[in-house]
Every structure is written in C-alpha cells, then in structure tokens.
Image (cartoon, rainbow, N blue to C red):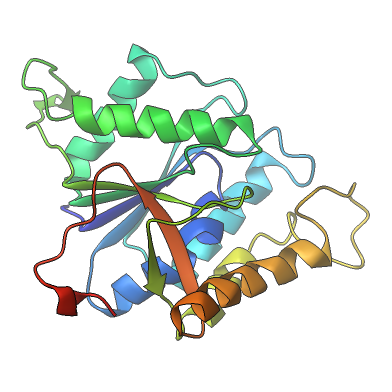
Length: 238
C-alpha cells in the first residue's frame, strides 16, 4: 500500500503529540496516512508496553490512519546504525510515502533526537539502488521521500512553517488522551512524570493556540525542515 504521509515516532504518543492535528486534517482531505512507532515505550515510568500497545491502537482509530506498525526497537537504547537503518528502509520502501514526518531534531528525551537522525538518514539511504532489501522474500524497489519534516516536542523551537489545524484540535486531544496511563489522571496511583501533570495536558492546547495567535489563526502545529520550503508563488502563503 502506498501512503502519502508516514509519521514516525520514537515512542507511541510522540506522533499524536507532535502532529496529531495535522494528520487528522490531511486524512480529512483524503490523504493516505500511516504511523510507525520505533519502540513500545517499555521504559516509560507509567503503564506498560502492553497498555501502550492498546492505547496506540485506540489512538490510531481515532485519527483514522490506515496502518500503524511498531518496529520494537529497544526503548532508550536503540542506535543509529546499519541494522536499525535497514529496518526503517524496509518500511519506507514498503509504504513509499511522499512525506515523512519524524521526531524533533533535538529534545529533552534522548530517543527523540536519536530517532530523528535515524529516520532522516534512512530516508536518504532508502533511495540508493545498491542497498538491497527484501520484504516477504520479494526484493523491494528503491524509494526516497520527497520531504522529511520534524515536529516540535518538549523543547520550544522556532518552526520553519506551521499548519492551520484550527478545526482538528479536538481529534488530536482525543487521540492524545487515548494514552490514559501516560497523562493527567487525578485518581492515578502511578508516579508523577513531566508529562502526567494537568499543566502538561493544558500546554498541548495553549502551545497550539499561541502558534496560531502568531499567524492570525486559532490553532497551529509547527514543523522544522531539512531544506528550504518552496512555493509556486506568493499567494500559496496564507
């Protein structure tokens, strides 16, 4: 199945937090979208890998993505090497996305920056004909995405562009809050973490609102790029 957009996160919930509203909008506009999680988030303080699996599946249903896969890399310990690159190359060649969206290039959690570089490198390598891969015993054709974008996570960054998601924040928040073990729950007996406070949950909305305020819309999600954003003419800009 060819996808228009493939969103990749180091952990289940990264994609929802980083670009959930953008994906919901693209899906509503008829784009074919998939999500790949690099790890099961098994080192997370709250919940378990099993609960994260169930939560990720529920979030995928809410967003309406066509596919979601987990590569089961080691949470906290995966590295940017040939073995891991090849696994992502196989995924890129399998789904042939025009656009890949992945983790922030630098962030509080070490997996985010690592995951960002790993995916970016794999996107380039996936276009090299001398790298041979096979899926289900069939040789894969080379494929390089046209664009690699990075969503913004914990650390504030200046976006290179923003997407108007004013009508899609409700879907984003439903998908985020499908991760019931991870986020604010006044009755939870789990240890507190930097993302389990009500302040963090509130910040998802007010950060999107603030980005929107800066460009004259209600809500926006921001992205950074690896090469210049190009438009056909000035009227392409909102």
